[in-house]
Image 1 (tube, rainbow, N blue to C red):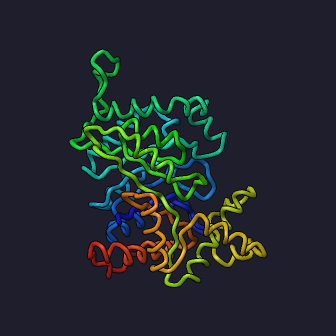
Image 2: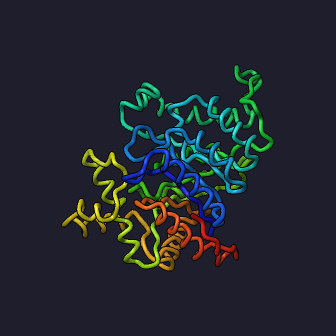
Image 3: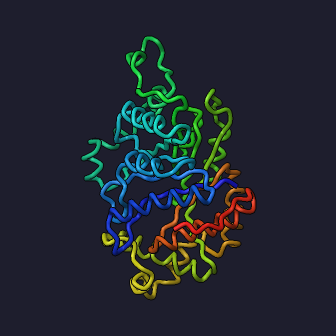
Length: 343
C-alpha cells in the first residue's frame, strides 16, 4: 500500500503561525525519511487554526528542504484563480523540483463568505465555471489549445520537461465525473464526507477517459488517522481535534488546537457522544488496528493510495503517529529502514 501525507498546517494552542508553518516543513521531511510517497499541503483562508493560504509558497519552501518526496497542493482552490496563473506557478515549481510536483485542484471556498468575496467576487459563479476553468488549466499545462484559439500562441513559461501531475479532489459526483471526463487522477476526501464514496469511485472508474498522460484511472483516498502505541493513547490524542472542531462550531477555536487536558474539560460530559462521532470519521488505534482499518478502506475503495491527515495538539505526537503507521505498513512491505529518529 502506498501512503502519503495531507497537511492542513494546523496551529496548536500556544504556538505561533510561524511555528505551525515550520512544523509543516518538518512533517514533509519526516515523511520523506519514513518512505511516504507524497506530501500535500492544503489551502485555507482566514480559518481559525489553519495557517496556509498559499500552498505554492510553502511548496517552494518545503521543496528546497527535501529531495525526493513528491510535493503538491491539496488543493489549489481553482474558483479563486485564473488557470493561466496557476499553470505558470506550478510549471515554475516543476522547473525547480523536477518530476516531484503534484497539482491538486479543488472547488471549495476554503474560508468564510467574506474571504471568498475578497478573493474572487461571485464565488458561486466561479464554481459554476469550474469545469471550463479546469479544462483550460489542462490545456495550458499540456499545450492542447487548437491552433485557432486565442491562447494557442502563449505558454505558461517556464516549461518543465515533466509537467506537474494534475489531480482533482472532491467529495461529490460532479468532481468524480469531471476527473473521469478529463482523464486525470482523482482524490476522494473520505475524512470530510458523509456520501457514498465507493459509488463515487466506481463512477469515476467506470466513466474514465484514457489520455496520453494517464492511461487508466488513478485514485487516492484521503483518510483521517491517529495512531499511538496503545488504543487508549490514540483515543486520548483524538480528543484535542474533536474539542477544537466543537469550538469552531461554537464560534471559538481561534487559539488553535487545545491540549488534551483542556480538551477533556471542554468536552466534559459529552465525551462518549463526541468520541462516537470522531470514530465514525477517523481511523484511531494502535499500529496493528490502524493498519487493519487502512487496509479495509483500501480494499473497499480499491484505491491506489491512502493519504493521511492527522489532527492532534502535540507536533511530536503527530510525527509519532505517522512514524508508527509507516513502521507497521511501509517497513513490512518495502523493507525501509525506519530506525532513525525523525523529530
